[in-house]
Image (tube, rainbow, N blue to C red; front, side):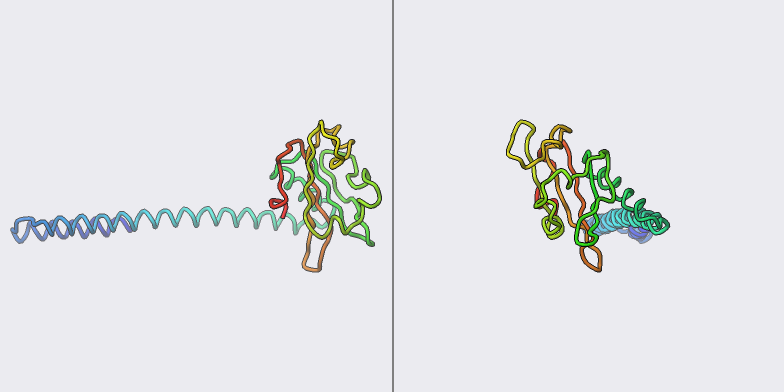
Length: 193
């Protein structure tokens, strides 16, 4: 519809020139060219905006679908496992843990691709919830290094980095998400934030 208007206008100008028997002038050519250019530009940007709106609509539909699926699930364990599955697929990382803050301590509620309890590997001071709940953390250590940033049990599984991200709700801090993987340069502190 939008492309028909410039075409009709150009046709009207050409028809008027033919009907009146006038010789085409330079200004007539410039008018036709200007109308065509403006028409083409408006059609182009209309289609571009329409495509962007379609993409945004698809994204909103996808988010709504996820939200509907989550609201149908009443078992918190299933919700946490589903969330962990999506996060480890999206990043991609090989392992993940979700800890919930309960009775002033972090309790493992979900793990992905491992039976190892990430926090249980560490000494008591490292299990302090304040280390995990206040800000994102990223640690990395190459397999051959021995600086102690990555627990040896994790390194035997090929882990070269881990990142922890506090989980927040409207009521406050709910827990911590920890992901780990083999790629040394996978995550920066800024990306964790």
